[in-house]
Amino acid sequence: MNLHIEKINKFNVLNIDDERIDAHNSAELKDYILQMIERGEHHIIVQLQHVRFIDSSGLGALLSGHKNILAKSGRFVLTNIQQQVLTMFEMTRLNRVFEIYDSVNEVTDN
Image (tube, rainbow, N blue to C red):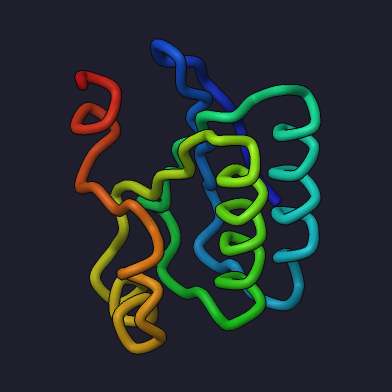
């Protein structure tokens, strides 16, 4: 999986450069996020601008990160979600669970 991190203010911005988050790579994403949390990174923004498809295992990986961050009183935010991926969040009502913003700047400028 193509992942890279940049630091903006107190946030660690995780950029996902793959077009798909599915059963083939969701475990790797989940492990990566959990390692970030274990290192003490409790404010994570996940940028999804390149992701065109996500399945239930991909949603589960993100939900795991969200749950673990909340246990540490941190923030787990999703940004730059393409419409077809956002539709999956809406169909599963996970758009009510996650903080979702149009851009990283909306989060880091606050």
